[in-house]
Amino acid sequence: MDILQNVDIGTLLLLGAGLAVLCVVGMILFFGLQLIGSAFGVLIGFIELFSGVVTGGPVAWCGCLVLIAACLLCVGTVLLYSTCTANPTAMNFCAIFP
Image (cartoon, rainbow, N blue to C red; front, side, top):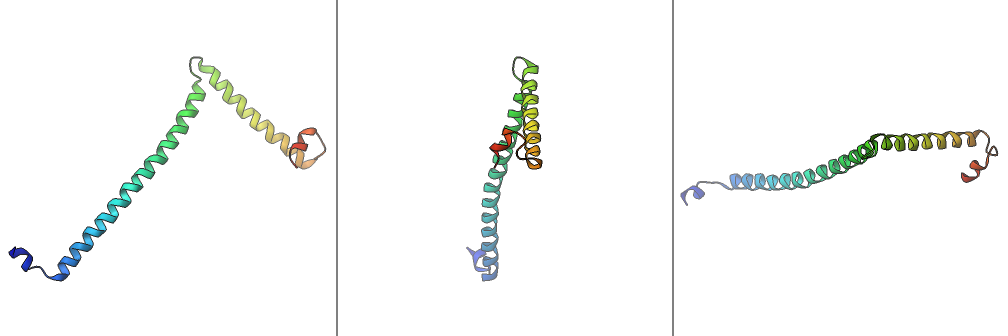
């Protein structure tokens, strides 16, 4: 107990502040790493889903064909919608978008 008698109040306050900062930093790191891990998990899940669609399972080209068809459908929809802005009465497709 002789060690504690030689310590002044400033050192104890500094030691307490250091421990408090370590606790706060530890909690931030703990929750921060969990959030970063969850975000990477979601990103990797999307990448796995995309690669699963592209590879297509047992027939390797089937997934690519479905993906290309989906992309062409999206492009075609955008092209049809772009004609609606130029001439809204051009086709019945434009009636979908008010």
